[in-house]
Length: 196
Length: 427
Ligand code: SF4
Ligand code: SF4
Ligand code: SF4
Ligand code: SF4
View (cartoon, protein in one colour):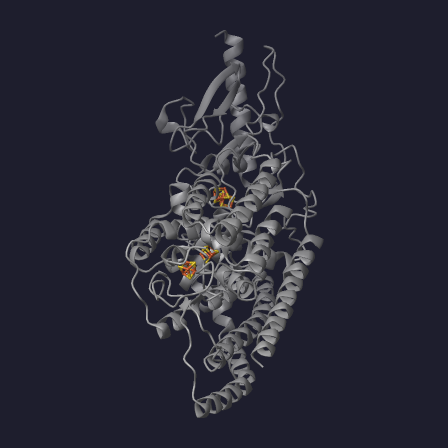
């Protein structure tokens, strides 16, 4: 009788094991059916971003992975740059008090009369979007924020994506990890990526 | 500067300022306001700086390392019976999955990706994440929780800091052991509704791996480590949602670490060796009347399970509105309905962004109510699940399984191998 009991227990165990295996397998199968062999990373859609400033503070890293990127192709090389100067400045000079950027991360270089090139110093930029706001409302909008993937640790859920009031951050394929203005159109279908 | 040039500059500025003020009030924000200049000096324009992310190949390398670590851990726990080996493997896993891979994506967090992909048609999960979710479960189904023993970076971090584990009363262990079920259920609900990934957000140890986090998260991590000196593996035992799944697998595992390699000689040396109090003692032979009484109680509690399930569902669906606030849309909609005055609060970013987006209040409310109805269904399921868990737990009290030897409790045992070391029987 003791043997029978052991046998019965073994039988229950193997049945349960099989059930568990089928359950896990089924779950995995269903997930594989919806999977994508590629990897994805987080990126900001510059056409959705409303320059709220949270990118500077919400990243899990102490130095935000978000920085300003300059799409030179779209830049007007303006003398009076809406992203560089504080609104209402009269002297278009390079002194820090005239600059919009709180860390003076934008470098203004004279090219030829009357054009200037604006270069972002990556190590100074904190991703606050102040310049982006200026450039977008008064200029061509060539300055915009992107998540830089040499800094980003690719969180399972981007902390900024959750905090972003405009839902501007979404997953993009890792082999095409940037949404640089001018290189993609805002209505590009987001096919397999989601906007959780 | 020649006169001509100066004039040009001034003219330019005037045109500029004119355009500037015109465009500031115009609304088509994204059109090219100023044409790209044609440079005369042969200036070539730089391209934006876009550093590449980690290559996809490395993601599969991680999976390979996971498989190797799981195999090695299982071999060490079951064949080699080496506590030392498990410990060295732990150190490796802590360094690789923890500090090098920065603890992300981990199997625990992968629960949420799986939940989201099954509920949201637009979300495609990646294969490495599925593998991170499935492989430890399958290994556990065959060899017990060797993943917990020395692969999971969170687990090994806690295991390596155990100094003087205190004994926790069984009833308290049971009660606290309910938290992981609740956490699992909530995490799945919030992930499936696209609200939040709470397992990732409240991972107490990831701040150490990344060497930086918000102050509260670092504080939480420190509290867990300090607590872990005395309460062994507090996160594993009283929070980890993946541990729930692993426990189910381990309970029916094909093989499992055993305390003694041969026959137990009832020396009781291993009795207090387990820092997690998961060694089951030999059972005493029950009296006949006791057995009958137990069987009766068992039947009663088995019959009560549907009642618990119903009550659970009823209770949680009653608070679905509260739970739904985890979703930003629901939160914002309710906030604005309650305090319409907030619309004038220029400091409130979420409100201002919503107002500027051109979305109407009706749209927001209807979106929020869709989410809310998902929450209604979801919290019914969650409540039924928790009712089932509690019901089964109460029922199980009256199953007395005959045990003649000291054995690890297969559900709770982390296969850490400490008890093996205490057993005087060697071979
Ligand atoms: S949080 Fe969103 S809206 Fe705010 S700056 Fe970042 S991307 Fe733009
Ligand atoms: S994924 Fe993480 S590290 Fe990257 S930008 Fe978002 S919060 Fe920062
Ligand atoms: S119980 Fe959870 S946290 Fe602990 S080792 Fe296992 S999977 Fe990791
Ligand atoms: S291997 Fe032994 S000491 Fe370790 S958790 Fe399991 S029963 Fe406890």
